[in-house]
Image 1 (cartoon, helix red, strand yellow):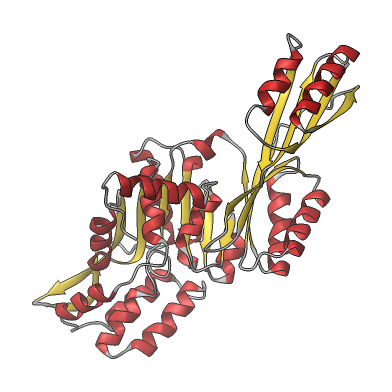
Image 2: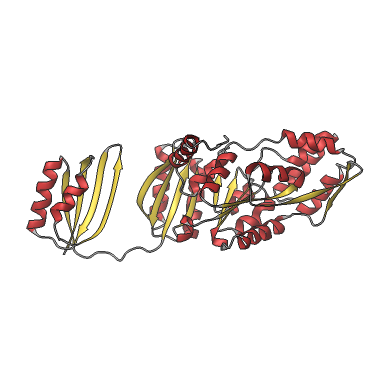
Length: 393
């Protein structure tokens, strides 16, 4: 008969060493340990339950100022093989939201095995490892919980790919950068209102994207290229964009962008951020002014998905190793093709279809969905500063 040993109390160096010394040559089959604000929780399973083992562990615990509890394990359950990472993020993130998530998991037949904090800012976030339940059921139930609790919840199957090198591909307008570039160009051309109305309908999935883009670009005919230069200079990255890209590149990830916008903007972003891949529309220019047309095929939702898969192939990665981030209806195919599709401050049609949704205005929150903690990000930045490397904010 095996024995579960649970140890609790104040943590200090040497506790684990002393307890395992007390075991001698006794075989053990499992061990887990966590420290929460200086309090130790240590559990391990030994393969035999004898008075000698219990006495040895009790004496060792007494000398360490910790409590020990013994639980005989008569019939160990079969180990659960399907696990998921559930990330919960909110600002605020009240206890009631955590309770609602835990309740939803239980109703779906999933059990929480561990919880760890990922970040305290720019928004609190926590990652749960849960055993049991299937992906579709968990996502459906937790999506409804997220809406009721007004928090963000992501579900990703636990697999080797979560720890492997990945490709992350982002939309540009209203994702990597703030606002819609075509509307900024339209403001220069004096037709902002008309273009904005068409853009909103296209991003909500109410209009064919290619037809809507050609109609909007046609309104820009005659706009001089120096107006395009002014728009390019006015582009602002979404808060957290540099941190996201910098951290992904540190991890060896490939990072790309696909845009229904224009190379007049994306070329600068590639150079500024050191991106690996990019695809966008090319505005036709003749005699120093826009003709109101684009060169070549329009980058629509199908082209975005195809680009994601092409970039992955170039990097030698499987589709399961890709992450896509977007906000509009023209991102839907790309989000569906990716191993993890993330809706970022997205339209309802996109939130409903994505694997995960973020509603906070910080793009680096994507890192938390990948299991990367704020402490790890800051430690890497600090190490670069100490080493004299440049770390843009």
